[in-house]
Length: 314
Image 1 (cartoon, helix red, strand yellow):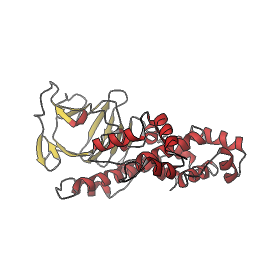
Image 2 (cartoon, rainbow, N blue to C red):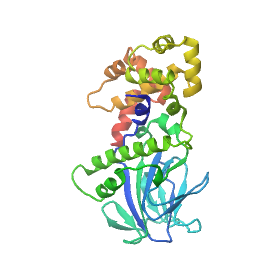
Image 3 (cartoon, rainbow, N blue to C red):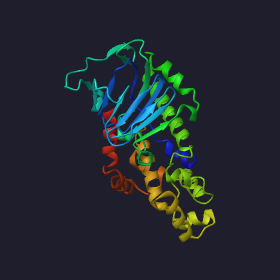
């Protein structure tokens, strides 16, 4: 696994909120769900995204927007259109006055709107829990990024459009995996744009020295790495590697490694039959106690609490 793949490997949708919206102007949706990450694809027509803190962005047919929570925003056909629906945490929808949803109607499986032949069709996928998306990835993203239609080509939008309307056994799992692939493809396209202001870790992967160090850490997190060992493996002095790594990645090598190990541990703890001891060995900690201490230092909760919270969310 390379450094970029490892950091993009964080998304893990589980029962994600997925919806197709069909809308005829005037329309306006106020989003206050505070979800960690939402992806919006315009299939037909256009839409205006109005963040509470930030510049508005127009989305045309084929454009994709990724919004990082917990900030609030509005999606509308026009800035002058008053909100008709407010989306709250847990995807509870009300009118602006607080009454239960009445302005939109069900138009099919996972399909809502105000007109069956509306001019605008959008797909919306929302990651609803912090544990579903890598914290390192979230920190790297701006509150709103847009991948224009002419900046990428993917078969995932028509595939997701087709699958979102099905109601078959296992369909939620299919949609979760498609959403993960869609998000990763969109992020990869955005990171590759020269004007994207890609995060430091993405740019660092292209460095011949730091990129190799990142690969080593990702491919073998259980190895007892030290800065000296990394320096020897990359042909740099200890001080030289530490300085170069920190300059390009934005944190020291061992801090990066600790974050990567804990991210892996968080995923591994979800596996049936996993124990804190077995996970500790897989990610490079010598004992369950060492992993528990590191996990709590980074995540603020113990591995046991993390697993219990994860089970409650399923």
